Length: 199
Image 1 (cartoon, rainbow, N blue to C red):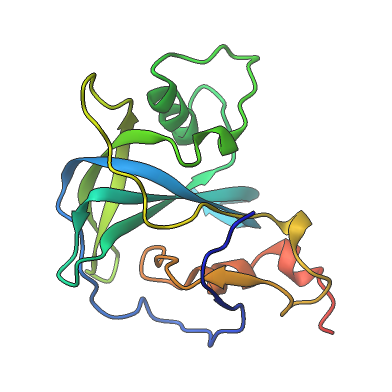
Image 2 (cartoon, rainbow, N blue to C red; image 1 turned 135 degrees about the vertical axis):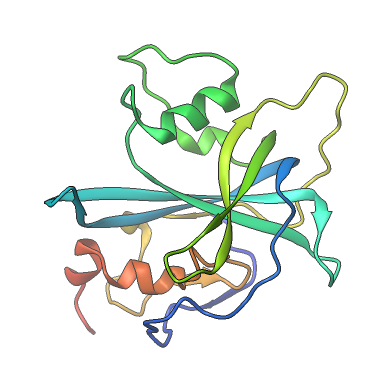
C-alpha cells in the first residue's frame, strides 16, 4: 500500500462543512483512480428507518484538469459498499469495465486503481448551500485518447491494515474533503473506530 506524503490521523473535529474550495468544472474528464478508503459502518436513517451502512470512498485524480495553483484536481465520492442491482457503486464498476455485471459476479475494486477512465462530474449543492462536485458516471476512455498519468501514488485504507490504537494510522495530505467534511472526522464516527483501543 502506497500512501505518498502522509499526515497524522489526529485531527480536530469540526461540526461545519469547511470553507470554500476550488472546484473542477462539470463535464467529462480523463481521470485515474488514486484512492480507495473504507469509510466503515455507521447508522443511516432513510424514510424514518435506521440501519447500518458500510461505505467506501473512491478518489480520482483529474489528470488533464488543474486548479489555479497548477495542481491536478482530486475528487471523491462515497458509496454504499454493495454491488446489488440497484447500487450506485455497481453503475460505476460497470462503467469502468464497459459491460454489465452478472448478479452473482464478484469484483475487486482494487483492480480499478491506477487505471485510466473518463469521469463525469455535475455540480451539487449541500443542505447549507455549499457547492460540490458529484461523480455521475464513469466509462472507458474513447479509443485513441491518451489519459495522462496521475501525479499521486495509489492509496488504500482499510480497517484490517491499521495499527492497534486510535492514533496509529495516517491519511495522505492530498486527501480531498467529502461534502466539505474531513475524511478523518467521518472515520472517527464509525463502529470500527469505536472498537479500537485508545492506547
